[in-house]
Image 1 (tube, rainbow, N blue to C red):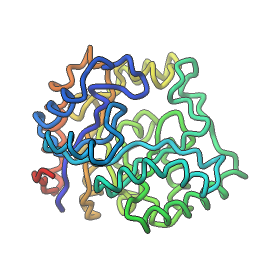
Image 2 (image 1 turned 45 degrees about the vertical axis):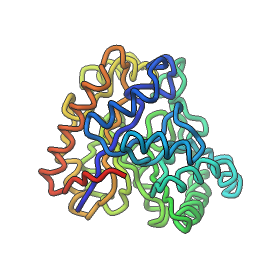
Image 3 (image 1 turned 135 degrees about the vertical axis):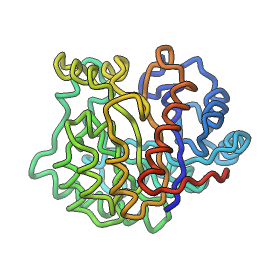
Length: 302
């Protein structure tokens, strides 16, 4: 079982809160990501959106493009409408050799609203679930046939947060709909990443490894913070700097034969958490945890 360890530019520049790291050049992000040991990176808002230009800038730093976030609105769109909306992003990822697309359902989400507590997220009604799952399944088949699979991202502030909602989503869709296992979002949602991993390891096709600061999480819940206020407050951090047991979370995935990417993704304020320092810490801890559960770390550059 060979995996590669990548990162996300959100530690250097935050897409949801552009004021966090807005002044940091893309070149700094890419150079420091490679210096920390990563061989791949996900998309960020400072990346070129033209395939040749993106391949050139990543190639100069010895980095592969791993994937990129897509905020779907499949709750209100038809499959055909969603395909049309995502086509440019899908084609960019495909052109750069990505095997998965980070896919979250964001219609009605509160993840980007600082005026709404994350606890007041939307929820799907009983009557809405069947149609949503049918459309998601069809979209998953369409994407899989074209070589870039859905990696469905359960995410705070959205309609898919909890283990129960993940169960319902995966039980109601074909295997072409993969699961993005995000340790930080599961802990924030009150779930055990190891239990979710054990139940759905065979459907996991992407992993986001983020840690959680227990004291900040407790305060965020107690004071009913928004998701973005929790991020600014430091609820997330890199592996090895919080409460998550990464060996327990990764062991079922390793046992199931996972052979994709492990992504250090920890949105923090770069003015408080020096990106390169934390990137090195996260890489080192995640690599050690992955090796202890049986993964072999691929070092090849693109």
